[in-house]
Amino acid sequence: MEHKLWIAVVHLMQVEACRAGGFVAFSHGKETAVRKVTPGDRVAFYAPRDTFEGSPVQAFCGLATVTGDHVEQRPLPGTEHMPWVRDADFETVNPMPVRPLLEELSFVRDPQHWGMAFRRSLFEVSAEDFEIIENALRGTS
Image (tube, rainbow, N blue to C red; front, side, top):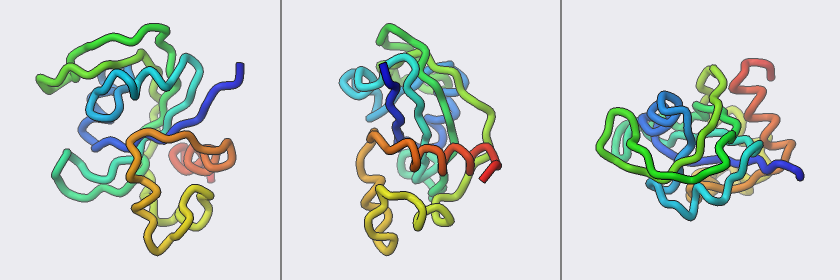
């Protein structure tokens, strides 16, 4: 089975909490969103802001491989929120601002209005796009 490659759009605080908890969660913790990913899938996290209504971040800031077979609810570390999650392994990466990558990413159809590409909370991307993001996060681009 071929694994899927995803971009998750969540605020930076949630990425850090997911990393600390060893799991992935998307779409404000909705069960339907986390059921879309399966073990072996890779997820690149994009943070538009540091908190839900906080300061702009506009950077890729996490890279994870889904490992969990089961979907369950767990507390999000540092919050009272109980999202639906799947276990995941996170890599240690350096945040990468999105703007230098916009011209290279095929899912960004109009670099002038690039934010439209990130209006979805979880979306599948091509291997080529994922590799661009992955290399940037690892500092190997």
